Structure formats: C-alpha cells, structure tokens
Amino acid sequence: MKPLRLPALAALATAFVLAVPAAHAAETADIAAGRALVQQHACFTCHAIEGTKIGPSFTDLAAKFAAMGEGKAEKALDQDVHAGVKGTPMPANPSLSQAELDKIADWILSLKK
Image 1 (cartoon, rainbow, N blue to C red):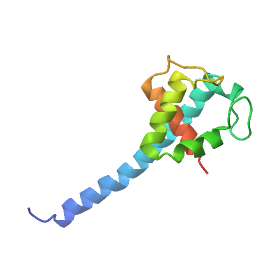
Image 2 (image 1 turned 45 degrees about the horizontal axis):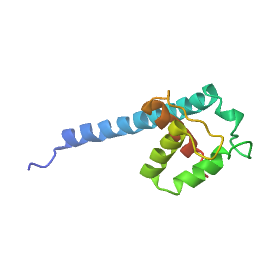
Image 3 (image 1 turned 90 degrees about the vertical axis):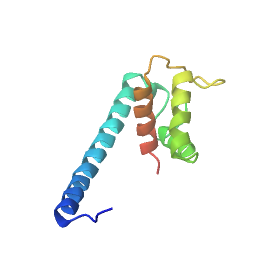
C-alpha cells in the first residue's frame, strides 16, 4: 500500500473536519424533533422533564435507560413507547414509525445528567 501524499492527506483531513459538524447538526436536529414528537403526542400530560406527574420524569427515565448501555437503552425505550408498559397507565403508540421512536429515545437520553 502506498503512503498518502500531503495533498491527499490534506483532502482527507478537510473531509473529516467538515463531516464532524454535519453529524453533530444531524444529531441535534433529531433530538429537537424528538422533543417536538413528545409534545405532539401529549407525553407531557403524564411526564415532566423533572419531577413526577402520573409517570416518572424524563430525566429519571433517561438515567434508568442510559444505565443499560447505549444500544440497549434506545431499543428498550422504543419498545416501551411503541407497546406501552403493562401494569402502568403508559399507553401503546403503535402509529409511531421506527424513525419517530428513535428520535423520541434520542431526546429522552439527551436528558441524562
């Protein structure tokens, strides 16, 4: 394998520098969309960002699910939001797409302290 020459290395570094802010911007947009979905689907009726209402706070949920690890946390949150939580007032939300569930999970997990 040939070593990279300076122009090729500079081009690679530039691509990386430009890609990182773009990825961060996309993640930030997904988190904002998640909060909007939570508002749209009236989740704030039962949950507050901090403090208990009918259900636990979003910050408490973030801590609980984040303790599972990144991959498991999002999947478990998706499942609870989609199917509801048996034995609690948490209803199922079967009309939400996988992309919407992921955005909601991203927003909740962004509240982890």
